[in-house]
Length: 232
Image (cartoon, rainbow, N blue to C red; front, side, top):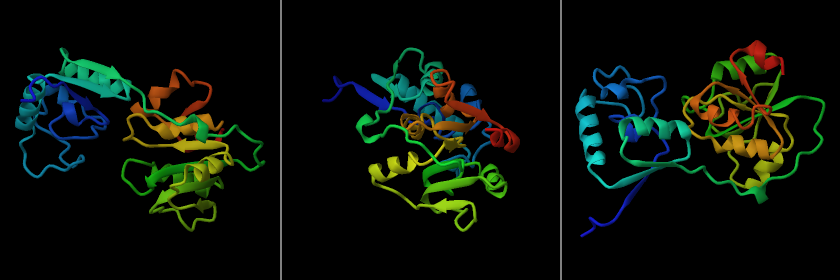
């Protein structure tokens, strides 16, 4: 009855080309059909060791279906093309409402960094050690999000979860740098929001941040150590 309909998969993670993993970290075993999986703790966790069979069932089913893939990230699209070379795969960026963002204003002489996510304590979202080292070094960091493990640190400002975009953009406007250390975001719109508000971005290397570095090389600074971060 519905055989004439075309299906569109919107790929916001790696699930479509792995046995079960939404976030693959540094694993490339999906290119070998997930044989002998070494990352059973990846989200979502595996209870039974049948990754190879699950991979085959999924890829065979999708390959036999009339589907189109859409992803906001070039790297996800590139991975999909390896597994599904005969499928139509398009990159469509996530949208941002430009009217919500303000022109940069003159900021204070104290350098302030901003960190944000829904849950600050979520694994993979933030480099907790780097952030603690920065706070201990005297850097002022503001946090937007729930479950902030740095709440109470003398150099940390905790704003909790902010749902009002006007409040968030005003806060962006009061800072100098956006600190991005996520290893799990595929196309982080928080980077777009920060750049629109005139902030430079300090970021650890990840596939997500590399989506932006070519177009915004003057505004995004890749960091890999405390000393390098402090040099800005």
